[in-house]
Image (cartoon, rainbow, N blue to C red; front, top):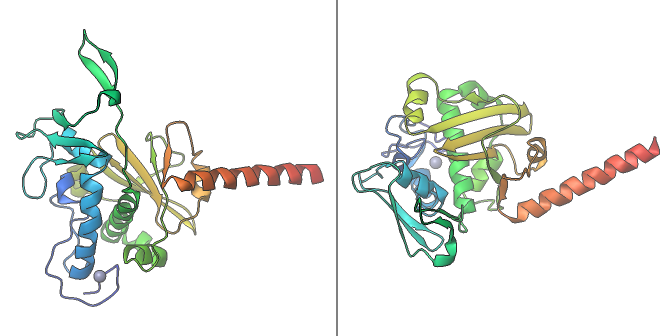
Length: 271
Ligand SMILES: [Zn+2]
């Protein structure tokens, strides 16, 4: 069998979960051998980082999803320790090392406060990689025609570290432009929805194949084909609550939009 990432023939022993087991997935899997052991091992490193040191950890803890070993979600976001409930009760999370200044709007009557957590603490690359990995594997498994239509060389080179240039993604409110379609169908789609996970795609043009990943209250989007910023402009980003990662891409997009606006002015003047 040929690995869909490194394209090498292999006799893989490991089973690749398209969405990580630690996010709650037990049945949406890759056919054995479609991800070789070497790629699987490489992926495990960035997946672990994405799941245990970012806002995804908070969602795992909040939804009471056990990790691979059957334990409650646990990790650190920024400087704050996150521990899910040991009996997997929902919405019961223990926070450790919480600095006073991070607690805002404390209401003594209702005993509520709001807490700002960094979405990613220098883990953007690991999250981008995780999204790209899930996107390609799910298309291969559930939308083979779409998978066959495009060239994923850049994605593969990013995941095997031969081109480590960062790859932008957006964390957004969930509202998007255009129609998205679910990648998994039937039982797999239903299984993922039980832990509020959805994998959607939209074909825009030959350079834009958008992949939208939702988990709990977190929605993220990435272009599976390249690192261009044009699709972000299309999505009206950066809207007030949308955030582009890695951070320097925000500046890049601003410049890109400024230049476009100038070009429009020049074009109008010429008329
Ligand atoms: Zn491989």
